Length: 98
Image 1 (cartoon, rainbow, N blue to C red):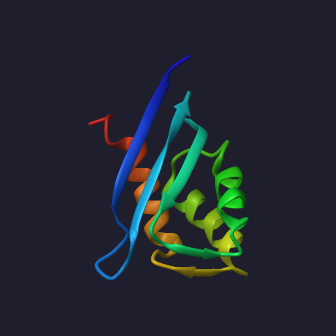
Image 2: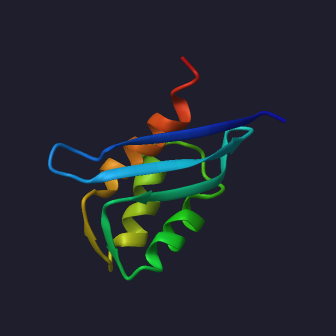
């Protein structure tokens, strides 16, 4: 059993807000994740929906993008796009593999 802890905080894009992701990858699957930052997501419960939707997924950009896009499709998001968040999560999960 291999657990990899990850954490990354960065600006989502040149016009975006700070996004911080942290959590654990267990055997190649996101086991736990927390998403926070100075972005705006409404309704507030959507952040929990995002975290729960991502748990159990591999840190694969296309898979993450699909799930994140589905979760936020009926939400108001300011400060990041689904593409931004997918990139940040993948970067965080893979930064120690180099």
